[in-house]
Length: 293
Image (cartoon, rainbow, N blue to C red):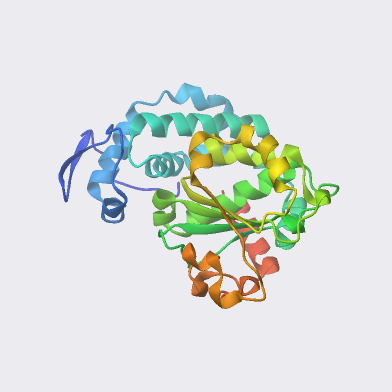
């Protein structure tokens, strides 16, 4: 088991603002989360959440995927942090993820195909840097996607393990979540697959045990407005509200509007930033996450 913590039964805990109730509609404030993570009070909240679960709901997955059972407490903690300690919502997220994990058989991922896709640089997690909101950063570069080679299931599998890699990189990521940079620079019709749009949107909306902040659509092509009308139906209200479109020219990198959301020092070099990313090395790190899931 990759998780540990003290047992307890209490459903409230002290915070800097007084007594925090875990079923609060708004959840814990972001500024309080960093001091709460790993605390005795968090462990009590986790124990209370687990006491409310009916483990029979997960028996089929436990049998099919023993690694999920081994890390069950860790997954509970991830969902609890992702929902800012609102236990009912955390339980809903855990069940949703477990159902999807079982039905998709994501735990049977083809390591060779996963490696091939991540090596293209289509999907990246930026280690050790954060956006201006303090969230981790996932980059999706659509121009590097080949629908003839990789199907929607391949894309969602890669996204799952990239997210898992990010979740395991730092407990704060579990609580504060991700900003997603959807880079559409130099994207053509041949890179689009509506099945991928639907599968990724569903994963981000309700399946993966993660929080997300902004969805930054970077340099959408001229035909995006037409496609967006189709994609729009797959997006949750929250995702629609958090989507921003950013247009930038490589001819004027110093004033890139991306810097409003992600500082230059935190952006990869291919965005005129200072952060070095090697997709081949990253692919091997993601595979390491798969073998240890």
